[in-house]
Amino acid sequence: MNFQQLRSVREAVRCHFNLTDAAEALHTSQPGVSRQIRELEQELGIELFVRAGKRLTGLTAPGAHVLPIIERVLLESGNLRKAGEDFALQTQGELAIAATHTQARYALPEAVQDFRAQFPDVRLRLHQGSPRQVAQMLIDGEVDVAIATEALAEYPQFVALPSYRWTHAVIAPAGHPVFDEPLTLELLARYPLITYDAGLTGRTRIDTAFAQAGITPEIALAAMDADVIKTYVALGMGVGIVAGMAFEAERDTDLRSIDAGALFGINHTRLAILRGNYLRRYVYAFIESFAPTLTREVVDAALAEDAAGAQVKPPADRRDGDAPEARGERLDEALALVQAA
Image 1 (cartoon, rainbow, N blue to C red):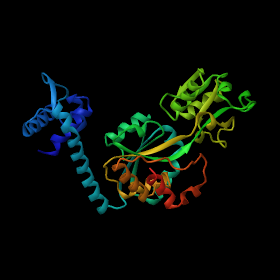
Image 2: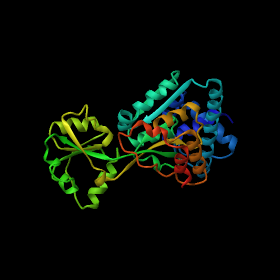
Image 3: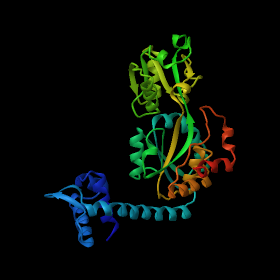
């Protein structure tokens, strides 16, 4: 039994049983992947895959039982390598982060700048995508950390740590009549709305609020990117609903904003790590740069609580634009986030 056999099985499943794609991912040949799988099956004395001729079509019952074991073995082998690197090269390496556009554009720059000052020799890779794409990158081991508002808490493979809270804002050109009355769902429904695509940046809360009020708004445009939303709002195509952090008064001078937290509630941005993954010390440092309450002690406590089956609760409310003194919150308050579960 060898690691290449285990990788061949894992990649075949990840590639939806397409051995050509699995071979490409492993930088080898399709017959080589097929041979590795067959040799492992012969050694184990069981068939791992259902076959239709030479084509794989699914996992057998033994294969479904063995797959999590294979994934754990490969995860721990990666952890062993990372641990060795961590002690040999304490301030060097690579940190890969996956985030949605809103987080990458508005929430990450300060944390990345702070991290670079601490670890100038660590290479940073930043990937962007939808919440589901961000989650898949973490599952596939392409990144060390995933950051998003939607979806991450739904994955049992993750420890999803609440990082901060934020609210939506309604934006429109200066002088727009939406600012002349108290903000309500009924008022917003009078105008074409421009907001995020489904499943992005708290869109679920927006849809839920209107649905619960029995209102069907006109969504004139849906986009992944807050900058796109602001562009079309400025053109007069409709009233925008964006993450509050995406409105920058010093830059968006042709627009005005009003907080919509009372209508759409509070959103929780989470930072996720893969359960069982070894975290190098600079990963802990990045997490704390992004969410100052998530010190190494708090993260380790969350991992321990998660292993015991507890749920990590969200931190105290922190709205967009909080001052940097949030970094000075007391450790006992931070620990309460995970101990209160």
